[in-house]
Length: 105
Image (cartoon, rainbow, N blue to C red; front, side):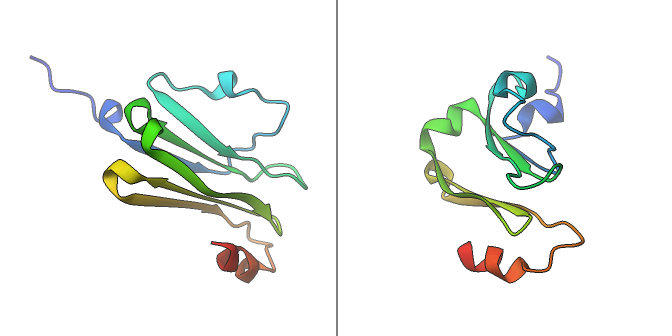
């Protein structure tokens, strides 16, 4: 029996600078076996975060925060079954108000 590939064992994949916007459909960034949670940048281009959760854990996943604040994207997900909270943040180098994002989290 072959050993499983590490990439197929990931429960969560969190990425920053997703560069997605409302013109890009979820189907275009799908990974088989995972559900995506997107926080796209709303006021300028680039930025953004996307988190993929293995499908078997999606029924236990709650979005706590998904926001684009002061050029910073923040996403907070909680997987109750694992008692795990995932925080994914994209803060660009030119961000001048990161404190507001942290206060929202």
